[in-house]
Image (cartoon, rainbow, N blue to C red; front, side, top):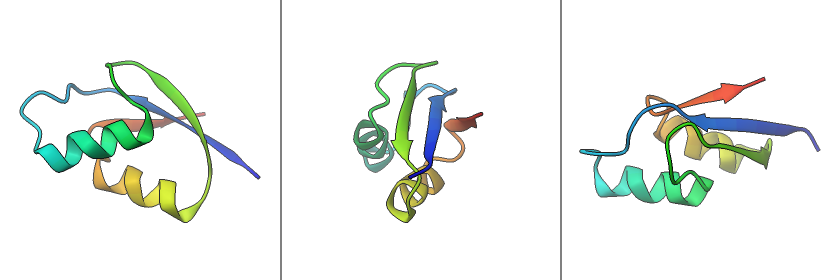
Length: 58
């Protein structure tokens, strides 16, 4: 399977609770942290919910 790297670029302060839980589900707990996941529709859906807080790293 292909993998995708996700980096948190914006602070989670003042975000709604559901977005904080989404970041936790992705494994992002601090700014500038990079995590690697398999590229599947579930992960893509989580990323789309917090697209303004994260970027995809090549």
